Amino acid sequence: MIGRRRQHPARAWEDDETRLAWAFVLPALGVVALIAVFPIVWTFWESLHLDDLRMPWLGRPRVGFANYAEALGDQRFWSALAHTGVFVAATVTIELAAGLLLAMALDRLSRGASAVRTAVLLPWAIPTVVAALVWRFIFESPSGVANVAVHTLGMTPPTWFADAVAAWVPLVLADAWKTTPFVALLLLAGLQTIDRALHEAAAIDGAGPWRQFTGVTLPLLMPALLVAFLFRTLDAFRVFDVVYVMTGGGPGTATEPIAVYTFSTLMQNLRFGYGSALSMIVFLVAFLFALGTIQVFGGRTLLEGRR
Amino acid sequence: MIRRRGWLVVTTLLVAGLVLPIYWTLVSSFTPESRLFAAPSLVPHGLVFDHYRALFTQRDFWTPIRNSLIVASATTMVSVALGAACAYAIARLRFRGKSLLLAFVLAVSMFPQMAIVSPLYVVLRAMHLLNTYPGLVLPYLTFAMPLAIWLLVGFFRQLPADLEEAAMMDGAGRMRTLREVILPLALPGLATTAILTFLYRWNEFLFALSFTLGPERYTVPVAITLFRGQYQVPWGQVLAAAVIATIPVAAIVLVAQRRIIAGLTSGAVKG
Image (cartoon, rainbow over all chains, first blue to last red; front, side, top):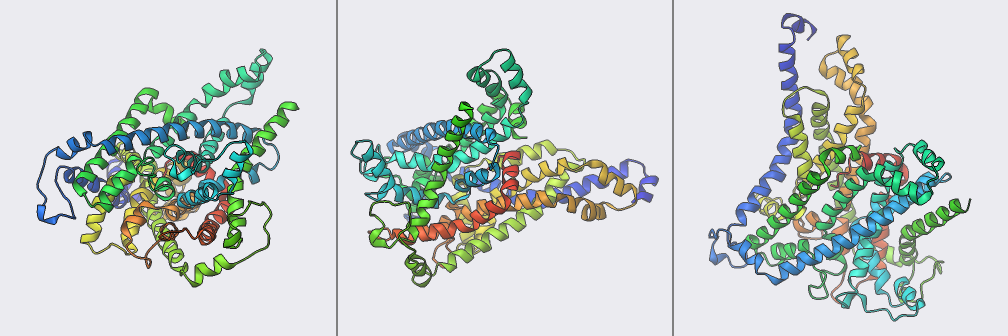
């Protein structure tokens, strides 16, 4: 290699490097393209067809954007979208608030920090399905913790999973329980990059704890908060496991988010054409949201927040 | 002093809230079915192994455990191997289109899984891969690979560049430099990536639910979910299974907490 480099300076060596780079990149890239990009294209193509696997005699005629038009007039689709919005708003708000509080508490912890971090990480590492079942158990048993707690407050607990509104409580709690640790650890990493001298300087200038929080901590934590917000929102928008296992979207379809509706259209009713159109809508909304967030807050902030 | 005590109370409350459900699950899994719905108690009345025994004698819970282990490990090995090569090239080699490549990888990792379930189902069915191990590993790579690439690019970039340059100056070829200088240095990063990939795949539900057809190929999350009998949920067994499903991830968290947090915060990509 050294010899060749001397004969053909720079250029041959650079060609070598490029060839090596592509040899390294292509296997991974090929796999991703094959199992991610190709399916997305296929889904779009499929969404332009009528394809009902339960009625194969109808064939698979191309119907243009009829599936999308059907979605626009589909009451269940709009409710599913609204449910998703409610779920996103509730969980992301709780997770960011509780996560920030937990991060600040962990940041101040001097003893046993490692053990506490391990305990905090546990809910995050547990399978979502398991978390959903555990919280279902907590709310379902008549004398379980949840019902006892409500009784102690002097109220009558509702039949959680039979009530269209009350069913949201265990759903949101289970999700918040599972993902607050992730948010907290992300924010903790952000907090630890803040120079303590800034707080001391603010204190000398007479800023109390609250002023220090709004004047120093929050602005400097913004990149980390944005990353947490973006990823939690995208994740909550795709929510499936928790709902599917805990309520199945019920009672009726009262807690059915868009992913569960899409799944039942595709895999239970086998309406592949219409289900694909729903998938594409989910894909587009998520994509536009990510793009919008990056536009508004700047990709730079996000990239910095990742580090 | 008062403020410090205040934060201690906040910490205690939050951590208790996070840990109590796990503890209660553990206690309940050792409680006989008849007492499961009685008044909750934080102290176990005694250890009853009935639910665990039933899990392995009546339900053959070993099969889903084995399936999950095989599928998650295979996905981890493939994605870390291919991802490492790709990430090294992006982090260290000069070639055009690098940032575009990285943006593409990030975009794929944000795909809603739901959007590719139906095409993957059709393709896997056509290739007779439904209800097989490769039929799960392949779809899993969709999200495992971008995660691996993203994390490893970060790790490779942190390695000092002058070390490789020195090795190459000494006449070690690219491949030898890679094997003998870069690989040992990258091991912690590879381990972190492997741990996170394994955790995410052990927990995966949607693809496993869609692409397995029978109990012989169910993974742990699918098997537990489908425990739910027609009329009644066998809660004792469900909770025992929940404990078992948690044991491997809890063990990993105990051993590798520091690494996991480093990985999560360096590349907050969810797989």
